[in-house]
Length: 74
Image (cartoon, rainbow, N blue to C red; front, side, top):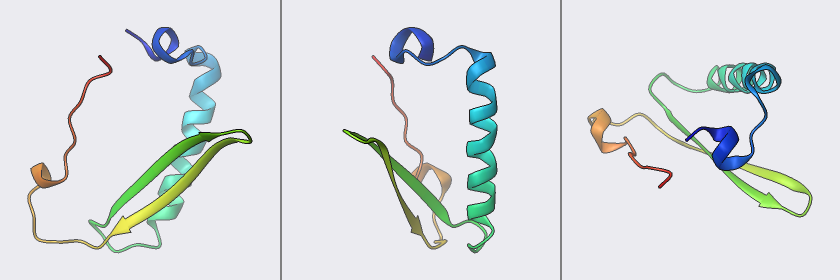
């Protein structure tokens, strides 16, 4: 099931430039952090639109599996 079908996302032509902007924003944000810092974004739908909050975790000695999250939309 696609994001269009599941969440009502726009088609790829409309979504692509917005996704590129998001990537650029995160790339710029990462410049202020030490390598291997974990950055997390949380999005909440409000009456005024989507509210984003950001958190960071300093690098730690841990395997990637300690931070990986696996899930399903089902």
